[in-house]
Length: 172
Length: 270
Image (cartoon, rainbow over all chains, first blue to last red; front, side):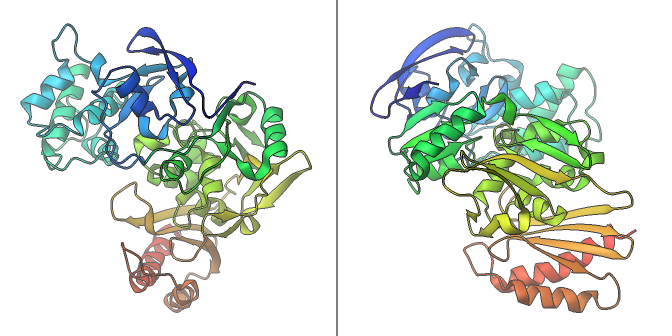
């Protein structure tokens, strides 16, 4: 049982986007700030800082979570994935391309969080109903798009990845 | 919106948690999923000296059936319970209400025990525990005690938990044969805290209605489906009172109890 003292920085070793990284964090440092300021990954955005807006959503051990409601020291030994991990060699992945095609973003502030939620959600729900997609999206605030393009993009990617038409789907 | 400084321990056994609580008591806060507590810390509504993280304590992460009780460990995440294969048959009310708890993303981290200890009057899990007549286990170095939901919830964000105690188990009564369950909620946005949440159990000509979001804690009353139901719901609405806030008036909340209560009990009855 190791007690991490308040005023001091402590090593945090974890897998970040597939690579082992070590940083240093005081116990009170939020994962969102740790990723942005210490790891230099500013793709994860910080909005409300109390878990409501969803902009800071990242994957911890594969599950979409709020980085602003997680302490940096809590991810020691864990696996974290951020939006920087989606594109490969500068080429957007299928989800990102669908977002662009369907105008699923305008200012882009909420987009990184939504993409990470979708990454987890589609892995666990390969054939979601549109209602499920909309339910998952209640965890995110987007003030530009009205969500219609976002839903369309996610549904399309689900269909492409699973090679079938999404069940009970009424296209919007 | 950054927490004030605190020490941090990632506990690995229940014993460690009890020791730290016994030593520090009022300076210590137990951190489970953090979906309520971290927001509270970020806003500096609480400034504990030590956070004890219980999410790595294996013995608090079990879901098991013991006779006619489903025992859920304090650190079981909401998404884990929702995905537990026997949930819909064992505790159908919880299976229905859990999708209303927070959002997909917060259920991935939020725990059953954490939601109960936070005791928000409009939260769904306290409402379920109260409606089912369940209980929680509180442990400290001094004792281990089982507290029924009725005694556990004592007001807004207030429970019977003493400063040196940690909630270790949630006891959910397994559905009795012939029981039917229903759940309804009105919120500003799906996943937000309920303006009013209602849970019902109907068995033969007996019915229980639980109401969250109106009084300062979940309230459960025995109801009689039939001719007098509307009058009984009206009396219940006035008894609960409710308060105006930025989202809805007390009057609107009382009206939801009458209308939604009637709908729920009618649709839940066989």
